[in-house]
Amino acid sequence: MNNTDYKVLEHHSAEYPKLLHNIYDYPEKIYIKGQLEDKCIAIVGTRGCSSYGRQIAYEMARDLAKQGLCVVSGLARGIDTAAHKGALSAGSTLAVLPGHFDQITPVSNTRLAEEISKQGALITEYGPNSHIDKINFVARNRIIAGISMAVIVIEAPKGSGSLMTADFALGNNMPVMVVPGLVSTNFEGSHSLIRQGATLISSSSQVLSELRLQTKALGV
Image (cartoon, rainbow, N blue to C red):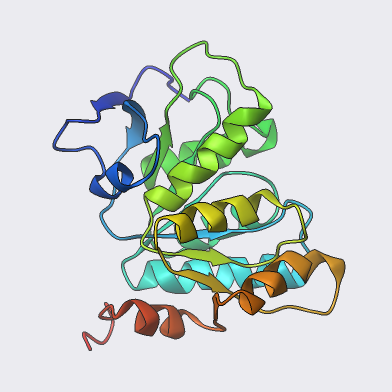
């Protein structure tokens, strides 16, 4: 991947994502490799996902991408990877990174990151040669939520970082939606969100209905 082919957007730039200004401690500047989209939906979940969660993430992302929405996630293993791949099969996706473009993590997703930069965008608040700390992953979650119109949680156990993303969204009065799962520890966090009032969904059409968005295919 060419790590010099990117642009830097200051927070006062006209190209800077407008929704990001609504979050607490928004980045003063962001680095972009690829093309940003206006209508974004976040799909997040656990790295150690089940085959069920992986399939749902792929299909949900694919169906939303078909409707012209850009799927946002964090390029992590598991749900994130499935969501990015599903979106790429039908449209665009955006990956928020915990480091600069020369520090793709996990390394196994380097090729996926390159595909995303050509059919969507990579975004980070970290400059060249920056160091990746654990706090970077938490900070990344606020951008995932902040750049999106809503956050969809696919599969999340208690303590999952995806629950932090949901919390950031709720803190900014943005919709949080949850796909229900099996009665297992891997879905305890997801089901807790539903009990707290998150919207239960099972299809992309329900997402569009909740957000009152027109479908690209039907125009209704």
